[in-house]
Amino acid sequence: MVFRLFTVALTGAVALAACGAATVPITPAPIATCRPGQPCWPSADDWQRFAATLHGTLEAPRSPFEACRVDGTAPPSGGAAGRVHAPAVDTHSAACAAALRDARNPYALQDLAGGTESAGWFDAWTATPSTYAVVARDADDVAAGVRFARAHNLRLVIKGTGHDYLGRSSAPDSLLIWTHAMREIAVNDAFVGAGCTAPGVPAVSVGAGTRWLEAYQEVTGKHGRYVQGGGCTSVGAAGGFLQGGGFGSWSKKYGIAAAGLLEAEVVTADGERVIANACQHADLFWALRGGGGGTFGVVTRVTLMTHPLPRTFGSLSGVITAKSDAAFRALLAQFTAFYPTALNNEHWGEQVAVRGDNTLRIAMTFEDLTGAEAESVWQPLRAWVERQPALYTIQLAALALPATQMWSFAFFQQYAKDAIVVDDRPGQPPGHFWWAGDAAQVSAYWYAYTSRWLPLAGFADLAPALFEASRHWSVELHFNKGQAGASEDALRRGRETAIHPAVFGAAALAIIAAAGEGLPGVAGHEPDRAEAAHAKAEVEAAMQIVRAATPGSGSYVNETDYFEPDWQRSFWGDNYPRLLAIKRTYDPRGVFTCHHCVGSELAGK
Image (cartoon, rainbow, N blue to C red):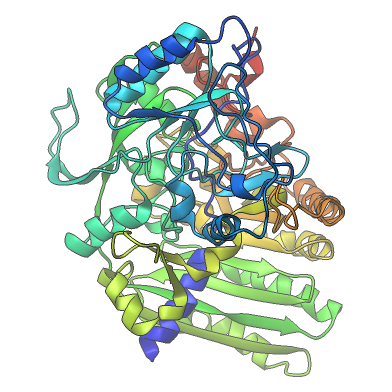
């Protein structure tokens, strides 16, 4: 029973962490790329000859919801015009029902070239399949796809798992390089990078399509070590998550994921394969660690450092309720003063939500502490609350489990079935699961999504702003996504990456976001535009208050506003000029272009 309580609490905390940002990106295309129906578009013979060169296959992706289309019109597909018109369909058909059921399964969506984790974003983008997809089996296929797209000036999209909020994993009228099948994993006890002479270090190499669940089950489950990755099990390990920086529940201990990158195999814009690490192509290596995915090349394999496991992984969760606005203001002041002295260290991660109903929703994780030790850390805040029963109520509990069991399918099946959802489609490999708390993010239609680094300096002064922002929308404080208080090793390695320097002085990343259940083009499931517009306005009003209280700060490129102002400085700060110079060196023609990615402002110039 103790384990069951723990896993429910822990998976709830981990699931609350945003999963996105884990995708490998796409391209809102450069001006003048060739589109279907134009004379420059490759002929059927061109496509056939190209397909014959692949170890994998070439296919015409379809929308996962084609059987449910309102007007029976399929998204872009193969053929001269790139459009296929089908008869109207019955949205209550068995095929449509199966599609809607699979829309809640991230692995089902990932098994389709036309599938994406998100359905779209209000007034920004809608998930739309590419015209053709290279179903890549190896780096040679990736290189062939890049060369073909370059030769024909095609809009190019790269996708591993399709986890992306900003629409970088899908685009109409494009060629998709789909790395989903490249999921090999190899553990090495003494990895030495190409061209390097330093002593070997424990590491794991993963292919571009590998999900974090697969990496964790191999590294932790079979080898008793830890690799710093993401919280969501279905996020890709080698794509935009990693290249954009990447955070997990215990990033304050082990650092941002990009800081753990030892080496990357990359297909560059000229279609060549290179190995980038600290000893060769060091400038490209630096850019790949935080400069954003799908920008400098197609990463086909990465090698990441691994770490000794702690004694435990754990969760502390609950809620503190204030019975008036004045009491909630006082609670926020108390908490923002408590955090820097008690929790701003390598043991703690995840989040606290500041809500408009005058509650603090606590879903924190910890490492290398027992449950009793974790609760003792929070005792001063608990005591302050409990001394005022007329003003507050509190429910708070901590539980821990052996770190070796964190991603054990058998463990969760025995002790916490309700904490996970199993991929029970026929023929699927055993052990595939995702956290039940992540369900709302699968096929989400985003109304708005914003983020802001909150500096540790002056964190205690942010209580009034957090209160005012929460009057509009809930504010989530993701403490694992701020590196202030991180271990010395995590900070040292992190500062060698291209991520925004503000991260290293940040107590947390504030995320204010809203989503609904909407599938554009599916009868009875269309997004509610009025609801979306209202939520967007409230989210923007809340974030404006936070922005005003944090002048000069930035936003996390993987979890950010599609409409982020001054995005170059917001995402990368003073690192942007260097990143732009590297972009011009490795991709002067802009073969790789995506929304608000390095160099995208130069597309077509």
